[in-house]
Image (cartoon, rainbow, N blue to C red; front, side, top):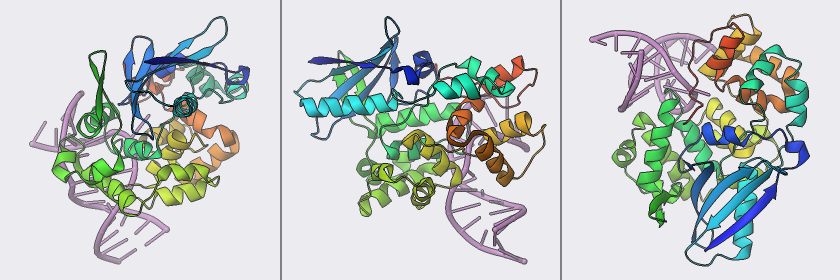
Length: 318
DNA sequence: TCCCAGGGGCCAA
DNA sequence: TTGGCCCATGGG
């Protein structure tokens, strides 16, 4: 059974670069098929739904969401999933001012924005997924996250077959809490095995639903709660707030620090506090978008600026 | 072989 | 509060 939904991209959300979604930061269980992004979901009733997300530019920009299922899924659950996917793909994210005003008056951001012009920040459907996604990004070359995440889905997600292809859901906390450390480590996550299991166990034991934190409007409180999880420090909490909540944060890691030193502090190392103050004053509520631009394909656009960047961006996933 | 990578926990001062 | 070490794994 199929059901097709068309979600218009409003004027304020343009420019809207769907191609950026197709080619950057595509982590399992999302897969790219042609010009669509495909993923298996398990909805609350326990039924599986395969979602295919595409895009049409003309005559009006529209996100095309195709749902496929083997047993009937209620209209309410279908619409709930369509809403979730629309949020993930930033259908109502007002980026016009950011791209057309903020980026244009800053030499660095102009170069960075030309690289992925109209790119939006993609969020994860579940905060648990964001937390684990950032944990496996700790202290590794970014490229390795793709494999670690894929192995976690293949080993601990649930699988379903559609049109002779196998798709996976993202692992649940319960499944990972019940896994052994060697089983988790077999996903090549190294010493992060105990963080992954630890987060899952804490969620199960204390009956936590991390998605409830999306109702909290105080970003500092959200970060505090996230940092109560094992293996979650300032970097993981900040980046989770961006990709799991779509709220303004600016995470500090090796890459973003280096970008700030090189592009805004004449190559000088400055204390974190100074970066934070600078970012807040200069970009405020847009800081998660400047973070996205400054840390995506940095080596490519920096070269055009005549400012070679020593770190290689792992943003491109295909 | 050694070094390092888009950190966090832990422990000594 | 801060600094140094360790933690797996893979690529240069």
